[in-house]
Image (cartoon, rainbow, N blue to C red; front, side):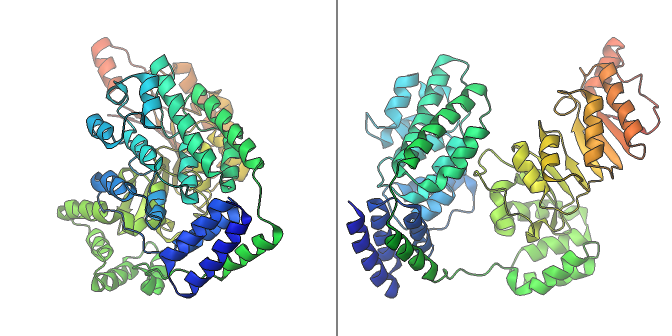
Length: 510
């Protein structure tokens, strides 16, 4: 196909749009993109697809992979938008290997290379991420669709599958899987993935050095292929851009809280006052929104309601936090008086590029504590930068202080959490780290440190002494687990004796 076929498809697309025949219009938009794979045509596909009624994902994650595969079994252009949006969700699951094998013919282009690389015991020895393999396998039977470029790119640049490279069969299977992902991405030839691919070349996110080298090699190969792609003529590019801009915005139902914008604003303007929260709770409850019940229960503070509160959060988490859901670890987040106050950042399934544009999000307005769960330093700093003020932040990620310095010279944190066993205290000169930390966070009032049984005594003294010199107003809470007490009682080895009773330090021994 060529540009002439694309021009014909655009004419038919205009007719379908005028008749509000959105599934038909989507078919024409896809035909135009398949003729000339220009990013402007991919944007047009997205704009038309947004007008179609996509299937809703199930409320419970345990049913998610079945839902995904049910809608993916036969290619449905309307369903692809929802499938692409959630392609990384629950990717670590493992459907039964016999069931997965029965779903595809022998010699399948995805399963066969993996079995050759590892052997028939492939899924038995590598049980994680079989959901991802299943999805990649079913996508192999689809016609090309630009909406799948983003999730495929995320799988590649985020190092979504961490199968070990240390032993030959595991490493061979991982290499084959990433080659298959890159091959699918290359066939789509969507130039909109170029920024993510270039970032991967500069800073690959894989967990191990062999995986990072593989990511860089595959990203460089894809970048070279995309650079050779031809583009639309200037006239047709202008026509496509104009058509995309003129498409009416999809009619989406408003968020449940939108009619109460003034009530939400009153809550966020005075986070310490329960009165506006209870007014908001009444309004939400009257509309049938269970968030109102959560606010009321937590404001009244009755211990006997804790089970009900936990159930509400579990059932309605995704509805309440909306676009934040893929970025946050639900089990590491906490609600108080109906609002998020602590968040755990990142999961193994968080899509690439999701951490930008968080500033001003309503659900973050009452957050006082931020901790990393599964996130690299650069993305974690993007989250921290969404807040003008924070009370508590965990700063124990490798390379985090350097990333913070690149974004701001001064951070308004009051409480910092560290761990002796991890970066930054463990991997660098502790005195140097404390000097850098205090320069970045000059308003420190408290430093919480999780003690490690094997930290050398002189190492612990070094950072405590430097903290006392650089931030004399900052109190230190050193938390020591049961292992310290057990070792002292069993062997008489008291590794905290030299700091017990030290001024400016509270030693918490559990």
